[in-house]
Amino acid sequence: MPLPLPLDGVRVLDLTWVLGGPFGTMLLGDLGAEVIKIEPPAGDLARTIPPYFFQGDSAFFHSVNRNKKSVVLDLKSRPGREAFYDLVRVSDVVSDNFAPDVPERLGVDHTSLSRINPRIVSCSLYGFHDEGEYRNAPAFDGLVQAMGGVMSITGEPGGEPARVGYQIGDLAGGLFAALATVAALREREVTGRGRHVHVSLYDSQLSLLTWQAQNYLISGHIPGPAGSRHPTIVPSQAFKTADGRYLVISPTGEKFWTAFCQALGHPELSTEPRFNSAAARLENEPELERILAELLISRPLGEWMEIFQRERVPAAPVQNVAEALSHHLVALRNMVVSVPRPPGGELRLVGNPMKTESEERFTAPPKLGQDTEEVLRRLVGYTPEQIAAVVAGSSKEPVAGVANAENGREATLHR
Image (tube, rainbow, N blue to C red; front, side, top):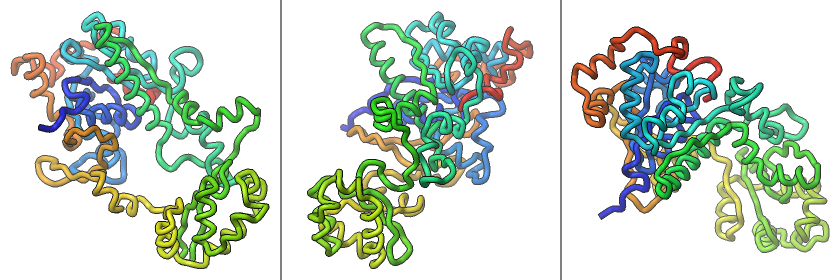
């Protein structure tokens, strides 16, 4: 009998939208949590992001919303807000990525929710800080990459600042938010009470600077961009091959350096005084790079890969996204999965990188509001009349203090 998934039995109310927050809650769903995506009547903005769509929802939305249900609640209306509170009573986690002042205005801040359910864990993901001048500052991915240092160390030396190719500013925040949530759930097993955890996208970028930040804190040296080169390990970079493809080599340590030189057909390089130690190679990097560039462009990529794999030299081709997703490792690791999405059609999705010895399960990203009736009936026992009132937002009178909150999805919110 297969093991249960690690978060089986955990229920998450997901108020997040667009990318970073939904990515984090999707990871919780991949680990077995029941993730209920609470959407405003207009839906998550991510559903509309061009240019590619499947069954009316964007590819962008599909990328971070598998293993979730969708419930539409207008938190500005009394029926919607009361329904949300009823769900809080039977849930474990509420996750949001609103600007710091929005949860209190909506009545979904941790203080309010813990009165309803003292065991609730609240996780907030915001851009910079929950106080002071950056409290309500917009925090889009490019801004976070710019301020967080990563853009200054990405790209070619002397070139313009470059962003990381995917949205690391958003996605790193989602990763840390998922980890913080699991930590709070673990603590609750001991104390019986939930807590509020919060993650800043800016903090997340500083954390990922790791040794570059530590080098600066110790030495005062400010790192800059190095292209594909590793700043301290030489050689470790991309080289062009005879067929115009690029090959990354990283023979780190003397054992691999010696094997690399032998595989090149030039074993003398490993004992050459300019290159016979890590320090010497770093000092003489420009000359070594020139020599290796001349050697590696003499053969096509496939030939070099056969040689280096045979000799166990650390090397890899630079693959595009299509090549990465079609590599034979993908099937071995179940990293592209196919799921049905009613009313018809199969949707391929990137799989779950966290292997837990449990049988993986995947459901397609939900249609807007497809689970509203089922969730309210099953979890809180709503009658058809009560469900109809929630769906219709029968009380048109907005809840005090949130008339303009738009479920919190306003321009100052953080993705």
